[in-house]
Image (cartoon, rainbow, N blue to C red; front, side, top):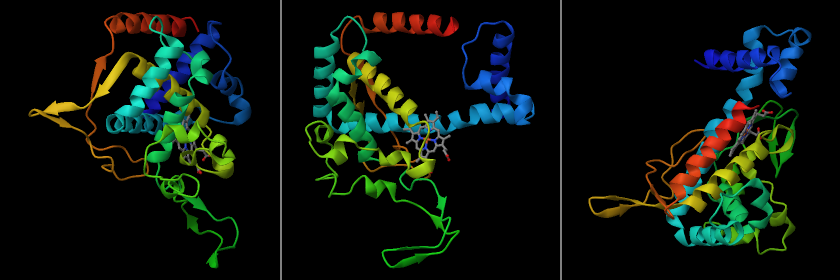
Length: 272
Ligand code: HEM
């Protein structure tokens, strides 16, 4: 299935290159250099598309963790919505231009990624040389995991680490928090190359979601159901289990504005 998907995506760009209606991008670059790279079509399609696959499950999981946090910490949601309403108003959706003016919303996203880690054990690395760490000998070739989940709960950096406090990233003079590097994206030279795409995606989706909707618990047999804050699937990417919620429009013309925005975005993509 992946091969079909990746080949279709690449062939679409090839056709648009032939028709002269394409913006230069990684794919146009790769196609132009195919012979020089020595890749056949399938190899090239994978090289161009597969890195994005690493970004889909991870980014949607981060969004699900944000929704879980919204259900558990409605007072933080009200502050995000208050900030968005004051800065953006009611007549348009938030845009990337608003991002710098929405510090609490930014803090909410940072706190989401800190509170519950998308990849709690990080990705396996291999020691490239013999090491001694805190008196423990780690021979070359050892598989090493960084305990990412614990790193983002370190009380010396994040006091009261199990509390959800977006303001810890806003009302601070601590350079470790101001320059917070998001442990959930890994470390060193193999740090996630899609980190900035992920952060921008989360900003635009979360700010627009909370501009438009209240995120509320579902009601089952007359009782509000809130998924457990520690109820997560096991695996490299760890998702909230049994996540259920309701999106309730915050005002009447939400549907109309969102439909208009979807049509505008579709037209923009078609024009590329
Ligand atoms: C919230 C979303 C994301 C999370 C939590 C995340 C997390 C990670 C982590 C932990 C690693 C391993 C880093 C290491 O080895 O130390 C990684 C690697 C990687 N990520 Fe992401 N990622 C996210 C989004 C994305 C996106 C959107 C893309 C692509 C557009 C992407 C592409 C990649 C690739 C290609 C690698 C492998 C890099 C390498 O091995 O050199 N990721 N990511």
